[in-house]
Length: 471
Image (cartoon, rainbow, N blue to C red):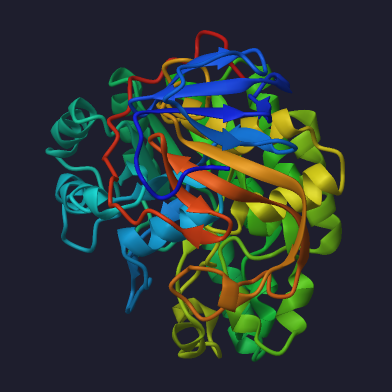
């Protein structure tokens, strides 16, 4: 048993199987002053004052690192509904102990100003957070802004090839940003959909009365994604610049990036939970607006083929692309997806749905699960091994999983600041039952036992992909 809710400087997690990204074995973890200080042979003697956390029969994993969260994100007329406190509370219930948010400037706002506003929110979270900056348009000040942000530990920069008039960057801006971030030890992360192909598809759909939520998948075709990925890879190769592709939804897009890696480019693929679990049949249901996201959900055949790349190594990370809109926001323009808020709530469900479907259901190893959802997100964002590992010296952010626990996903039992989950009613197997943040037990047996706001803004180190992590 664990002594709750008091705080103690030393703890030992005893009796479980520790799962790292490249190994798993029975071991005990000794924790002191918020860090893992030793990985011990099971049953090793420790200081008698150490509080014992019993993990018998459980998997002891690094807390998840979610590389793709939008917290309080404004797009057009809509703002997602969660604060840092609400988002990180949901995150820790789902086993995620670090989120990476986006500082996306509003029209007229400078990237540095957007980053400073968002960074200030970190201290209100239950867990740590980092930031991706965002550049929309290059001007004479952009390089200096990027340097200032890199000096503050913000080294990844989000860019979009779609959403003209709001966040879309042209190819000159993308190339200049790639050059600068490369030289600053950073990386561009990019949303790839050809805006021209998307716009044409949407116009054709509108002309035939098919631009509502039920027809979402036709308005953003697969070819829009692959065409844009190919173009961005060419720019990255011309600059020998690292590049990370967010929420890739098709095997063809993933394979383009994998082929570029074989040619020597440092290039990474992120997929997200809903593209790996859900399919476009949901657009034929009673509330299709709830599932509107970009890229859209794909066919069941595409989802299955995409999921196979979790086993091949072609996918680097799994994020949530968490956007906490509610049904009312989704319904305002459900007749025209061009004006809808895009995105699904998922920071709490990312790990459990992937674990249940792919580890318990399809035989993905627990170590590969940790690699995809914790270690690799930390590596690609300059946070490893502080995050994404349980080796000595790492932060004691720990998710203790019951791999046998069977449960049903319901909105009422989740903690996200919305009125729905896209996984409503799914039967899952496996769940984190105890979660530690900085060595303190925050969640235990389905209850929040420590609501202390201990979140820190994490300054990321210069990115170095020349060593062991050279996918």
